[in-house]
Image 1 (cartoon, helix red, strand yellow):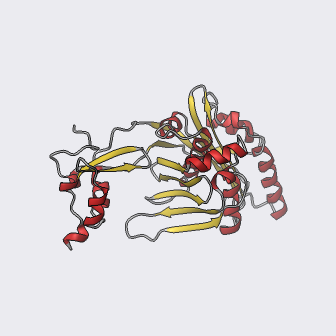
Image 2 (cartoon, helix red, strand yellow; image 1 turned 90 degrees about the vertical axis):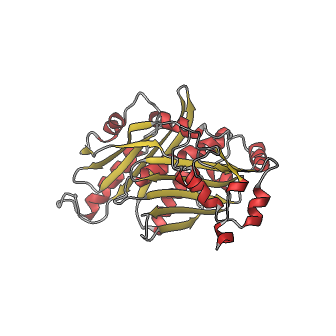
Image 3 (cartoon, rainbow, N blue to C red; image 1 turned 135 degrees about the vertical axis):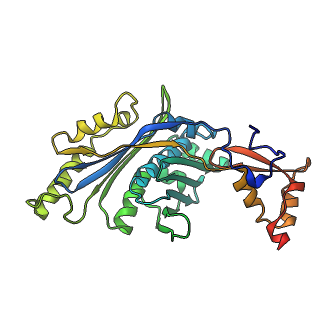
Length: 326
């Protein structure tokens, strides 16, 4: 099979093959749960070796890598609520050294993400603090959550200003202000002896009466939520990133006395969706003059997939602008 990142005799628009990236699946990467007869449900994400495969595609500073890992674990956790074919994405853009943070996950668990950092700005931030907060890395800007249902379906997007010191706090702020939903989010990402690991714990207070004990009045429901919140706050990063501690065991530690019920787990996989055909279609949207400017001395145009960090080379002579043909 020819390398899809390189020109070949096969027309670009026919080359939908996956590029040379890891074929990796974590069978129980996302574990949904709820507390029986209580207004509490949530999801625990453990990326395992998938985190290392995704994060080591880019040679970022550990602080940036950690932020990217948190974003990917968060996107995986939030995608667990999708009831349709599509994807859920987390995007942050600010004036800090990390100019762009993006992660998305499909309903089938295909996960990808990346962070773009300004080297000079990052060096200045690290000089000011050897361990900058997520807020210091992102700066002033916005946080966006997007549900893309694909096809002709309308996209839903919620956008808020970045508020909070950590990405977890920023997410709680979004749900509290934009969705009027009470949540508790904990994110962890770090380099372990087994490589990079990332995890997300997302818990929310269920509104309405569905699945709640009818004997629980509003005050009792509030107390049940407070109890679950107190237990969730005992979670540590070490527990969240420990490969030897299965998700079901970790949740049992927290909620075994509170009616813990585990729902069907979901697999997560290495999910970059780039292809030669897709990038060729992007190139066709540029005017001929821009394509000429993009061409290198050897007559090739190189496009880099930001997610998997692979370079795709195209012969300029073979690329024709659709704008120029119109």
